[in-house]
Length: 107
Image (cartoon, rainbow, N blue to C red; front, side):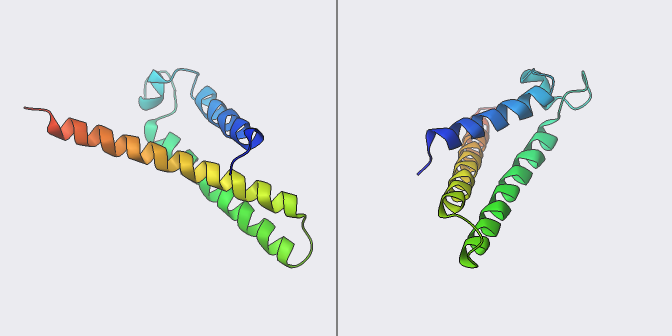
């Protein structure tokens, strides 16, 4: 289960990603206007962050198995990965829902 600290870190990471795109969420989808972050690069970066969290979790688990890590560090890494994957799944579900709504629109 995610702790408030893990959730706060996830929100801070998201805010950092949005701020790096110029602070304009509407401009994040435009690749050439204003030098903002494109939607594809935002997705790529988000997927990279999820993969990094998974690798960190795996590394902490292996370190604990060999007696080099604290249980709390492992639990924190696993919780961060859980939050990242849950966020990614939520975004995926919203994208699929939006696509389905578009496909239902009459021409």
